[in-house]
Image 1 (spheres, rainbow, N blue to C red):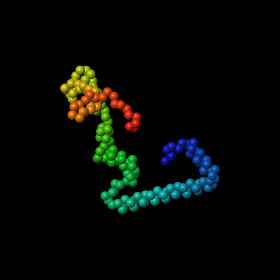
Image 2 (image 1 turned 120 degrees about the vertical axis):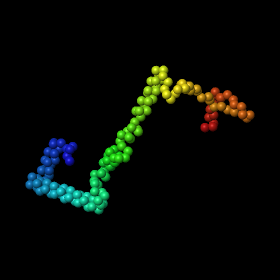
Image 3 (image 1 turned 30 degrees about the vertical axis):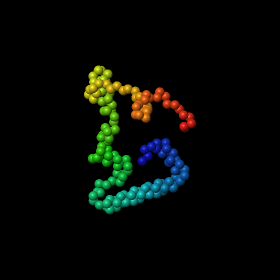
Length: 153
């Protein structure tokens, strides 16, 4: 409960409680607070038991902690019967595909042709510029430079 509260903070809180409530009223205050906490716990446990009894026997293993989103995901997705964490990780991990590409590049660099490109390397040519046509359907040479018309913009 007080995992992140150190001993110095606890001593400071105790000292402040003695100063605020006095040494004679402090034990009575502690008893009232602990009694209130006990009653609250009893109330929540009785409410949980009532909800479980209303749900019926098919929800006998129902736990209220399972309603927390982290617990729900951890129970049903990561450890459940459905899609597991390992399948998600392997589906999103590009490592295997990158290893195959790296092997193909190494094989090509060593002089061996990879299985997928048995016909040889593919040469890419620069695409020609725009081609215009005359009225009779004959193509003309592409224009070297398209003129800029400042009035058109």
